[in-house]
Image 1 (tube, rainbow, N blue to C red):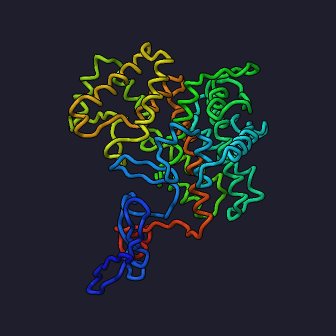
Image 2 (tube, rainbow, N blue to C red):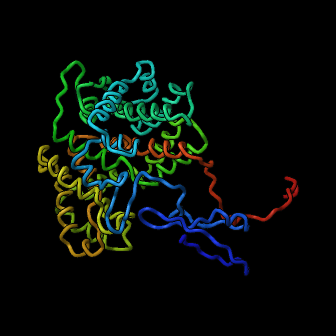
Image 3 (cartoon, helix red, strand yellow):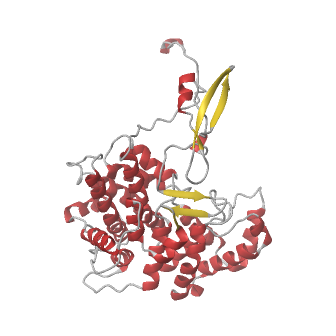
Length: 426
């Protein structure tokens, strides 16, 4: 029998239906409250379901993350980023033939038109890579606007292919621009992660040579960041997409939201913290500061607002991070030595264990990218690259069903109605 909740409004009982979730919390349907002249108040939408979705499920208390029902641990161990992208988009894992077709389609569309590449001429080497990436993604709307029909499944998939295929090329171009080097074309013989690393660090005209350890670790980072339910950037994509705008414009909006230090910039903050600590001998000093409630210093990359027990993505990433650190000779980098010492302390010291301040995905991805030689301003760009299939999947899910334009309400606390006063009488 369907659950209902009764709400008493000035003596009038209103039945509110409870919508049953396949996993996790059920949801109280408050849509009819508007007929009673009442809105709900939920700053940050922390207790509000803005949509229904079949893509990703998170149980923060139990440390569970599922893509289309598959545990993230299994996907990270056995799958690839492009296979996970197919899973998110289609709802099922591909057959071998389907995956090969999908991978070939991605490879065929990775190239960026030379004329379009001139967009980067408008930036200088000091421009932040995320500014370039935001502009380039928005610019793609100009190339794929004439046949815009967001209700057409064929158009939806075409947009998805273009975005997933072109984001590593755009990201690498932003990096090459920032270091004043020529762009390198994608190589159809390379995997997705290998292509990105080659386009970033390769040399024009030379055969690609990419470490398997680094490419596997990067592919795993992409998988672990591919989706994370209705976070700020995904919700931004859905909100922008609800206006029926070009999907490339909606994704550009999500990219801009990801740029914020409280969202995609968290792994940058980890490196900032390591730079501030700088030496192993100063770790105790900074841990003492972190414990002091009056001190503004915070240890970044520990604990998580969603995962209250442990971050399953961090558990998966730990071994890859260590493999990269070993191959790259992390013991020679003082910042990475600080990171390794902090990791050990967080896993052993009672203060951290009791408060469940475990190293999270931002900690491991931050030190892994640092060990790879990827500069800090590129960290959020890497996040953008990984999150692309999740964003486009949520956009596709939304426009494939009846939807309404997003219109949050407010609690108005301003002035009551008043009359205009002539400027000479004020």
